[in-house]
Length: 148
Image (tube, rainbow, N blue to C red; front, side, top):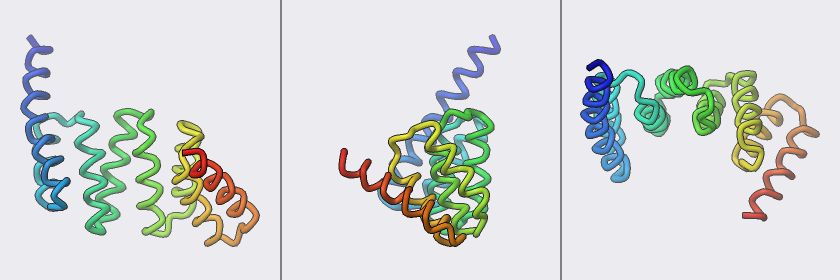
């Protein structure tokens, strides 16, 4: 019976999630965040809702809120590459260089063909004055963009 309740809750949460996606597609960031929040209230393990809410929060410059949501995604499912990539980008804004580097490196571990991770890591390396490492990452990103 518990499994049935969980399925019903997830179904109900998915309706809010879908509305959040539709609002996000229309660039209604705050509306999307509200719908994702409702989905999470119903199903606190809804990884996609946290992921999308985190990205929407980042889009309205709520970097701390975005980091919190993306961290929750990683706690629930450490294999979600997009969570590391997005959290790393948010950490650039909060000037958490060490955290950003760790996230971009983890992104590359999960998907070595992810050019954005190399580009973003290069940004942090430049900020730290590590120009050789930045150049290597920029070169790798360029190679990957060219392949696509």
